[in-house]
Length: 401
Image 1 (cartoon, one colour):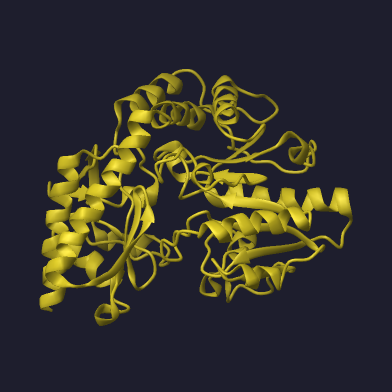
Image 2 (tube, rainbow, N blue to C red; image 1 turned 30 degrees about the horizontal axis):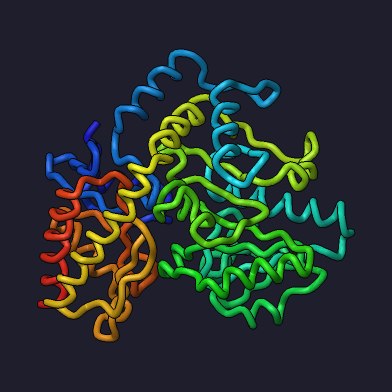
């Protein structure tokens, strides 16, 4: 059977519009399509491929586990899940872990837990969830409603109630909404889809204080910012603020689907037997691969490397901008960076993405005005230089029209 991009339109639901080329093989931070054309990968599967493509430690973990156990129901536990949970609790604030298959599922669990916890401790009046405009928390109906982008949640009928949105980095907007009826405040410690926006120190500390004051749980969605992406194992570690619940996915599996919700023993106690579950959550294959990823990422070599590579990107983008004047600033932290288009190129981030693919570079957007980069955390310096050279050619083409 000949597999082409045209087949996509014949057999797939039309909710995606993928590129014309079809990748078939990856190694490190390089990818090859059906024609054998080679691309530099600055997208990382949207901050997922934390160790690039086909990292030998991941391949070995998958092969080894694939010959032991693939799946058990949650009537049983398994060794990889327990080892991974122990490692996660050893290196974070958390004491308890719940495994799922994705960031949306981890967030769904966090939100359900927050409601359940508030109901048990304070009664049914305490149900309000506050999140932030332009935030993104997944595509289930609950998480997409909590996410602050109505375009993603409109058009599917009545939304889950008692969900409100404040403005990111605006403490007064949160003060206006929060009360004793608030059960949780959910936010990304670095907004991803909303445009790669870092929190101010005053804002993030203030959110923590307001949550404490009103007995509300602070939920950090670290699906995109976690597992080394910012140069810390989790972004909260660099902010001097500890959440009550943290969600992680994407880079945690390095490309194998897994999500996790981390919290304290006392809060987790509200998820009594039967209150929540997942058929595949915590399956041995996913947990074995994730364990290999965590062991490599949580080293000073990789985490310090992320901070150093961030500077290579910033220097390279500054050099491109000095020539072509297309960006107003570069936002973000570590290897989650957003080049913000200036007023001359408003609304044209996708043009830069399309031009980049034509120059054999894979990158991302974060809204209509931001070109996003989320490569492998261990991308070789020479791949950064080569990718930036290709990006410069793409920028030149957009500028020249």
